[in-house]
Amino acid sequence: LEPTAVLRCTEKAMNAALLIQERCAVCHGQTVCDVMGAMASDGNRYTMADLRYDIKHGRLEVLRPGADAGAIPKGKVRADAPLAGQPLPAATVDEFFRFLQCQLRMELREHTGKHLELADKEAERIWPDVEAFITPNLGA
Image 1 (tube, rainbow, N blue to C red):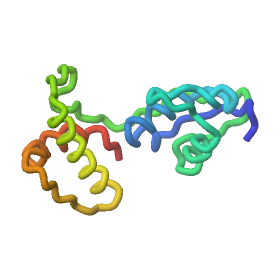
Image 2 (cartoon, rainbow, N blue to C red; image 1 turned 135 degrees about the horizontal axis):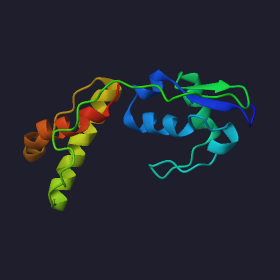
Image 3 (cartoon, rainbow, N blue to C red; image 1 turned 45 degrees about the vertical axis):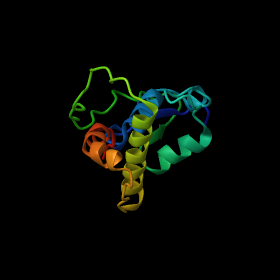
């Protein structure tokens, strides 16, 4: 890749999971050289492997050096999370571990399509709330 090539965010990126959407939007209009090593909001540095992955999956396009990337494409409208803008309530360590069990269930379901039975009855009880909290952030 040409270091001075300009990157353009695609509509596909703007309809992806929020982390990918944000990562690609930050690259929009920047050069390859500008984005290499930049800090992402998740605390990780953007690498050449990340850039190649985003290009391969059609989330970023490479333009000639000096090209105008134009406006960032609009993504689909997302519903706000049920408790958007409200502070999270205080939680005990046990409640946090129950949330993590639900998070693992969600990860397994999203990545493999399998269902994980939760042995902890209290984790099972909070599952609908956790699912509602996480689902708006999954993207397309």
